[in-house]
Length: 279
Image (cartoon, rainbow, N blue to C red):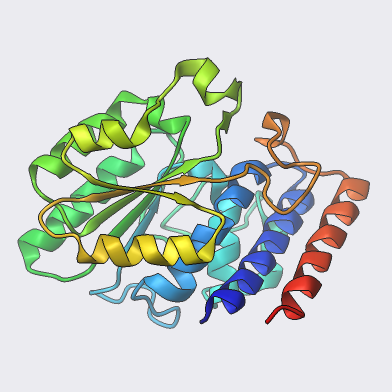
């Protein structure tokens, strides 16, 4: 897909996020929307995957360490063909395979269950090490939150990954600047994020995570980096695409009501129309 097609697809993924959270009357739209461009790029362009064969042995792996943004991952999986888009409306419903945090036993396309913050990077690092030990050429991608990296386990995993030179591992930090209690810099500042990963022997790349061109360039650079893991620190806008959610900590974990849902979908429809008319 070209960058315009990816941007259009990301807008559809955002519609799926808003629809799912509205239907559930609960969930985490803010961080799902900020990472929608990355979810889209990974699943529609970057990763070696097959929705018809989700357990393909040499597939690339993805771990959503900030598991509460499952609506973003589910929406990308649905539009990529792992399960019907209509099923997004069953988010968090009793008996649904789309629960509030990812469960690999129930949901097609998931490589790891997650939700307890800080643990996903350890799992991803283990997958990357296994790939090296088994002589496989798959790559492992792990998305962390900027509030999540306040957890100590993140840095234990980073230390190990850097020490073992896991160049098949890409850590992505969604730096939207906000967590449930407010600004990350006020709660417990992780800055400068890039210098911290560099100290653990990572190659670091800083990008605008809501720009497909910059995401594409970063992924190419990560693939070409040998002998060390890569950390992509992406500056994003929490709630991206829905004006009243953008850069508002209050939309970290709150569902839109019917009126807000209608407004949000109208805004995303307009963005889709503008992208449709773009060259």
